[in-house]
Image (cartoon, rainbow, N blue to C red):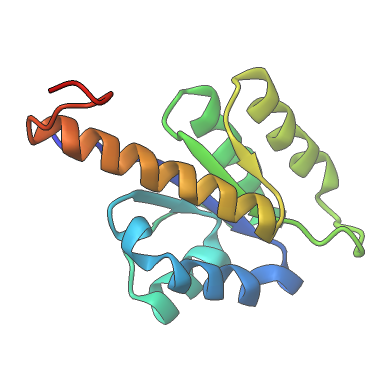
Length: 143
């Protein structure tokens, strides 16, 4: 069975365009993944990047908490959450809860483009490692 990383994609309103551009840049990795997103972010990804996304409610309507529930149930492997640190969010307690769940369950979390890129590079490495292992290729320099 092929490895398919499960990735949650979330972005505050002022960061949604950044997330769309990021997903487009790494579309080949995201195509090999099972994607989850809060409502409006998921719709934008589907419209602009043409990827299938499992959508929950929008963040202010409980979507961040729904993603947190999926994290606590070990149904998501990675989170990319582009936050707007300069704008107060009405649902900030939900955002804090989601971040706390990532910490409690040791889920890799990226909250800006630099950390998102590092996370996606690691996901790509895992995809390649598992693909090579599945093809019977030797690993670790063994002959």
